[in-house]
Length: 305
Length: 281
Image (cartoon, rainbow over all chains, first blue to last red; front, side, top):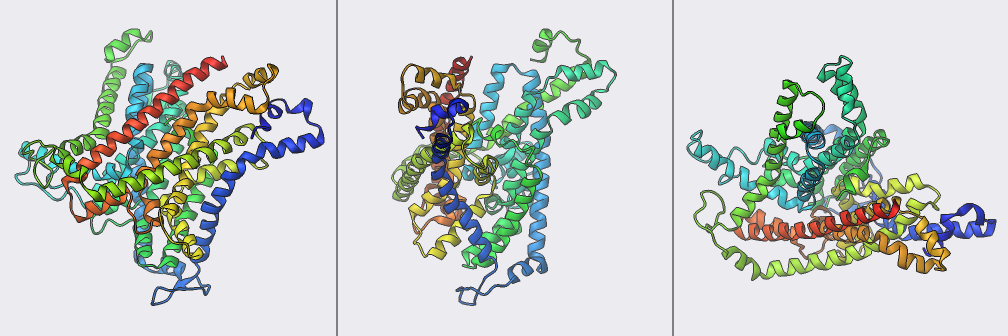
């Protein structure tokens, strides 16, 4: 680590062949612990999970190492799995759309009309819940949606209902609302980073040249913040594919998403079956990431914290 | 507020634009309320007297906080969580900071692939990370315990440290190092007295972030833990038994705790950024 700093600074004049090789190895060395760690604890486990997904468990839940694709066949033939997977995709899409619909006006207002200093403060207010306990943020919704929650209290106060309703929690709508809440900060951060670089006088220019406000918005603003929009979508959509706490805590009996099925298999010791579902999700995630890799700005969302 | 800013604007403002701005202001305000309302009610309910927290509020008490403080289950879980978080933060910070240098300054053969490798664990859902580790551990016939939890947490905390430190290194003025070398400092001294102090805010922020991420992590812990409980696992078992006011008190303490750690980190990072900018100009 120490040998790299100076030779890296001015590689050209000093790079004799032997020295160049040594400095190259020296410069790469600090990378090794991280590479080793991720290989051992991330890449190899993923490969082993893939292998597991082609094995099976017998009736005593012992692992049997005969290669077969029945775990995958089951996914495509049994309606429950397909239905849950499609439901997960729909839920993820709906939350993504709603998240954008809320965060775009929010960040637009913030960047365009709020003073720089206040912007920072508001942004901080958005990020703060983002780094606090995810479990507790989901749990906190019980205080709103539950039978003795704030929503019931409010509705009874206004006289709309006369006794507490249990309809607000333990259903898909509750999961939908909670997921928007949980993932909103991701979307807001990604969009903020994109809008921050946008020069809003362009919109005025477009309108001076005869564009209607909506045309200026669509043809001038949207194309320029496209990477931000895509990053926002990915940061909301992908985690929901692995989401199981919100369905567990506020989703009720029929609220299961695909990750709940993976967990159920694991609880019953049926690792190969769970692994097959996990691989299907992982494949889906990988494809999404590959398609949008050029537009994805992970740093915009992550390093602001 | 709309009028105040429009006075500064040199452009003529149409009634439509003013209406849009007003509407946006209301939406933005509503969004902030949406973000904090659940937390506010959770905190309120932690002071509620009744055994089943909720409306109507019958009276305020600190009883649940006292009860929480004397609950040995919470003590054990908290101790486990802290133990894991501290070790994870130390390891992730060291490994991550080291990895950030070649990522930013070159020297590795496939920088693109390396970048992807270090962003994947952030993007991939925790269920997949956790299950992958669990099957790996099962195959190796290793016993599950707190050290397997530490291994699991390292996977997703280290990349955060890498990204944060790398962002700081990106804006680093290399001329400062050359100056140090001109003045006779060797590489070790340059690193110790010039480079590390300048990127220290990012390193500390990365460490603090690792602590909060580790303490809050539920999914990966769920897969990789043995018979022990960490704080989130303890909380979820409590919630499953039925909502207890003690959990609300505990939740309030954790929220306030992570908020302060987080606030400290942000202050450090923004303070560091300002300093760094001055340094490079």
